[in-house]
Image (cartoon, rainbow, N blue to C red):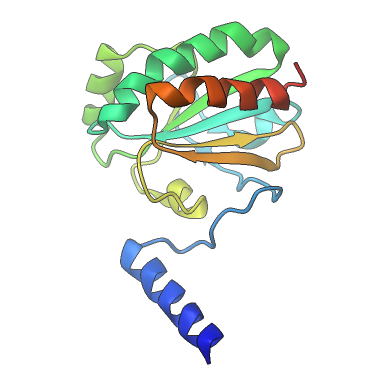
Length: 164
């Protein structure tokens, strides 16, 4: 009986949050996506064989402003080692994202998902949320939020994924 109640509670929570996917588990394949990007379409499958730091962000997200300079630094520091930073914007209005990017320039890949299907597929519940994906396409780690004190831990995870 307790398992049934737990499953019902999880289903209700999922429904209330608007998340249709199961929670993303470590070690499982990352859901593929193809989205419009700043320069061209962004297709996750094109990064196979590389380590991907996938970040979900929104223009209204304060911590996202803090994470962009750090993601620029990680892209610069580790791109030659096989890291690709990919940031998926979830704003419904493209103009909001464009304004944010004007004030927060990037040297990494940016994609746009105004419909919000990709964050649903990843069971994202807050901004920013990052998913570290290995060269085999499987989820290595998931991190919610962004604080200065987490930078070293996140970089360590990136270095471990790159075998550095």
